Amino acid sequence: MHAAKRYRLLNNFTILVSLIGVAVALVDSGFNLAPWLQHVFHIFYLLIIFLGFVVTAGRYLYSKKPLTINKVTVFDLLTSIAIIILLFAHFTDLVRLDMAATVDGFVAIKIAVLVTFIRELSDHDFNLNRAFLNPAQFFLLSFLSVVLIGALLLMMPNATTQPLTFVDSLFTATSAVCVTGLIVVDTATHYTTFGQVIILGLIQIGGLGILTFVTYFSYFFKGGVSYETQASISEMSYMRGMGDVVTTLKSILYVTFGVEAVAAVLIYLCIYDLPNMDFSEQLFFSVFHAISAFCNAGFSTFSSGMYDDALRFDYPLQLIIATTFIFGGMGFVIVVNVLRYLSYRTQQLLYRKDQRYEYRPWLLNINSRITLITTAALLVIGLIGVMIFEYNNVLADHESFFGKLVTGFFTAATPRTAGFNSVDMGAIAFPTIMLTIFLMWIGASPNSTGGGIKTSTFAIALLNTLSLARGQTTVEVFKRQIAEISIRRAFAIMWLSLLVIGTGVTLISYDQPELDLIKVVFECFSAYSTVGLSLNLTADLSDFSKLVVSVIMFVGRVGMLTLFIALLKNRHQRNYRYPTEEITIN
Image (cartoon, rainbow, N blue to C red; front, side, top):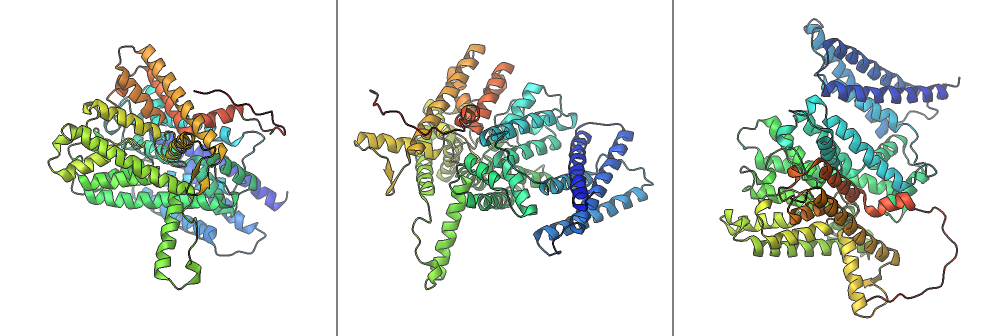
């Protein structure tokens, strides 16, 4: 058999075995297994790591290309050295303890198995087969798979402090993957640290999407992504040019992890002196809330969230978390475009005479302009409304005007799908409830971690209404004409969102007629827009109502229009048009 073919078979075998190893490691961590079975699993982990070394060596031995020092070879070298050091320290401990050490705590060994799986899978040819699944179907199935796997993981005994039903587990997993934040059990007390880590992983995967990680790893280790895969990603994310797909995905990852790292450091500086928390707990709190904030998830490791007595008067912390989730809700593509614009403007100021930094028109594109203006307008409207309606209500606990202003700003910003609350949501006034519902419905910006109909959808609908009132036949803004397909998509998204929310309200009210209608409406808007705010209703839902809210969260995250495209899209474009007729409206 040809050497390259033998290597490819070994690579496929290693992917399969390491995948089983990852599953075994999760079972090993989630259940209290017999010592002999833990030892068997331990040997299995070591065999996988050894197999990974063999495949890595074969990758360079059977390569026809000359060995060069690049990012992949450096990664392989560093991970190999790290694993060797890990194994040496591991076996040293075993010898010191006369081979009697328990093996259920070897977290690093399990991480090495996961690294082996990711490395070998990334070296495999990754391609989206559009003949089998169209991009929308792949997008839906990827989210659904993560939700179901997450639900099973959260039911493991070591993930919870008390048994969890499948419905509650499914609800929590859906809320985490869809970065919503609605909870039926207290995250702080019902889940162990292991369970909270699972939730955190689901939030990060749900916020960025599996395809982002898979595509980047494939690009990193193989140096490229197939044309068909780029076309599929471009179609799913509505990117205009396929040449920018990989570059944009890299920027998304860099910006995400960069912002989360900075936010975690700043959060730690705000809470490092909290009583009854050691360094590891403070560090986990900082990382958890940085990721939860940037992904607009709204999950917290405190039972009362940001309303906890230790946090709700910490105004610098509120500003940091608010800035983080606003940044995450702007949309990855928008954030990258804004950062490039700011970088260019900075360089233009520093190097005024350099011809490379002469004026470039439309460096800040029309999507960014619309998003920034709409976001700023909604934040101002929300802040003014909260300050008027709640100044002598839920904001009365804050003695200083600065405290009221920060808390009001946080309360106005969080309906934009963040889900954190620094006030008692059950005590807010009715006008604030209606304002919050409106802000939740609009939500965040396109290609972001947030939900809702999106700021651009609302802006286009508003511009279209104004153009009709002026008697114009086209929608124009910033000396550009909005494409007809964008207008059609905006109004489809708006009415489909109301259809889903209305259906959810009807089903829940039919199942539990005793519930307050405004609370049910608020809950469904929050679920669809993946916000996570609640008028203290979620825990009172029946199992049927929890399933209804779970479906609404899932549909809100993937988009009803995407769901329709996945089920109804016709691959064959018709090459004819019918005569145009104008229908009487209004």
